[in-house]
Length: 82
Image 1 (cartoon, one colour):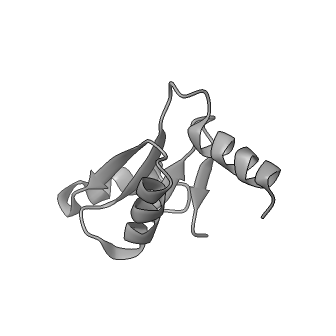
Image 2: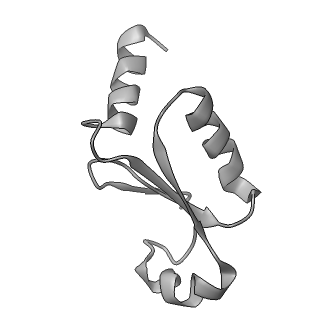
């Protein structure tokens, strides 16, 4: 990956520096843990939103495909596994 591609990716993840990236997943390690680690190692600030299983029934209809994890970029784009 070239330096310009890295810079573009970092800008996408950090945005304007005011609105942080948000990662939403259950309150377990699971599939989102690798993303949490990668963001921490890359020093990308993010909100780590952990959804309790008791809250899932309310949260599910608000997700893009009825599943987690979801990453909401600072520009509002939602990234999912599907």
